[in-house]
Image (cartoon, rainbow, N blue to C red):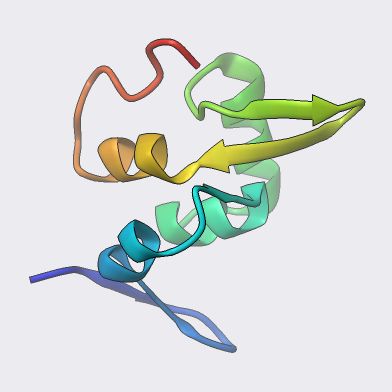
Length: 80
């Protein structure tokens, strides 16, 4: 059974993350993780939240790596 996080506008489930786009915004990743946007950016800076840097300051979180992080796998940040 997938866990769910409820937000103001929608319900975020692990199934939805698995079936959705290959990357998500840092804000969406923060919602899945249950942390603030600012804390998520600190996680990126410290290397605990893997991202793909697109251009300049634009970043996306790979959904597969976020899933591994949520499922407790220790290698979620490897190769980020």
